[in-house]
Length: 324
Image (cartoon, rainbow, N blue to C red):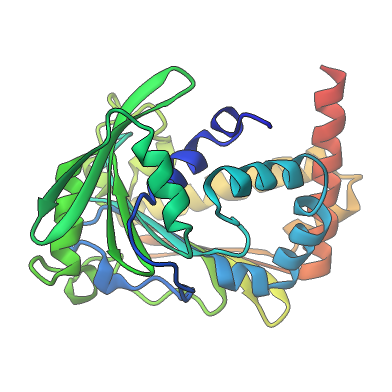
């Protein structure tokens, strides 16, 4: 059997900590429920698996890439090891954090799980401990992936929901939000409290970027340093794949230069790949607009055209890997 700890370290950690001693259930995938998110959240990332599988592109990805070869073998390994079908059983996952620490934050997972198999895995972990917090059973253990050891805490909140985090304190706070003991995002004035675009599969939002310490977080780009918040929706609607992004800048003066930077990057790509008709066509669906202290990016393209683009880029990457 393939070593899925090596192949899927992040996924394995998240799924293994389903630990959760509850009955199996058919969870219902749905858009992000902001009542389940802490009002103090600084960033959120939500994946609606059901919405993704319902899209033309999502179905094509499943048919062409996930139903054979390496991907199929990996999914089978996960299924045999922890009894979870990633494509059928997981309906939605939400990540969020009240800060920008690299290993901070919690994960809310909606899925159908194999209780007995997961409990058996936990029973085989000598570091596994159980505690009670506010009437909820918490499971904590040390997980090792690729030589990196870290403590993980999880709680089975209800039959269709599991809360997971590396810090027990953050899991406890998340439980307080769900129990209405702490304010939630839906009742806040946060820029993250918004309605995502129709057909959204991936939703990403970050606020409080003005407070980021670029010395401590090396991935902060010059563009992000001049933003207060970033909101991104990716999905499919009316047979069109779309990406909708909004950048709220710190000042009105910063919006136009950021638009110029993005526009310049796209212009450079047009020159680099002038003979690539599929790629150039994809750029035609991009619209940029700076208005006061906001930069709006909207991109739309028919699903079949997106699949041709993805297949082309995939083939190029495969050839590049083989050449190394």
